[in-house]
Image (cartoon, rainbow, N blue to C red; front, side, top):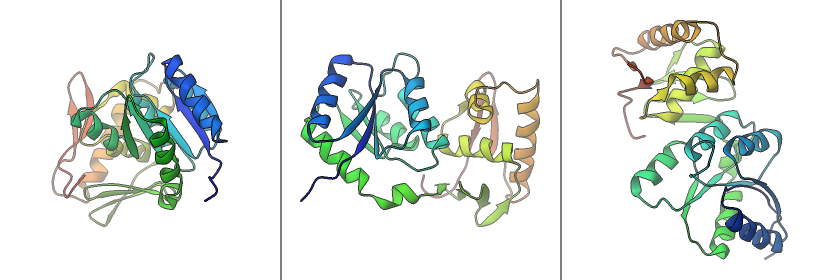
Length: 232
């Protein structure tokens, strides 16, 4: 079988390992872009189209989970992400999948297996056409920017949708106020109390379609969704 030529983004701060991976994957004819910082990787993912992104969790400027979440939020085309990391605890893997990773491989690994996993991810058509994010009974249509709670529409503004997108993607974990501002306003700080006002509107919109509080404020931390039903 002819091997498909893939375009890969590698985000890895260990230069020796990155060089080894790049040489191996280029040896099978693939195109590789490389970033050794999380923010650099996010910028490359936003400006280019890749078949697969290989992402390390331990990056010098930001956590790989944050990088995964930001890439998934901003992608026009849903690109599968493979986390390649020395963290092998179940809790680390669970957090990775909850933030949107599509596969998980621990270091050290056989580079032949890494290549096979990349090929397998690139063949999943649903990953490239997925336009919904569902956690429990909350479902977001990323293309239409609409929200359903147990099948009932939730009225949101554009900012409100971005807030819910960030919170649902992080569920069941909280999102720091600074991370929420960064995700929603993309690095441009809003006016004073703007986030608080938008959070109030999001909370009221949710309460109109459900009979229990879903959005919780955590003092000195940020915000989180609670009590979503079904499996997450």
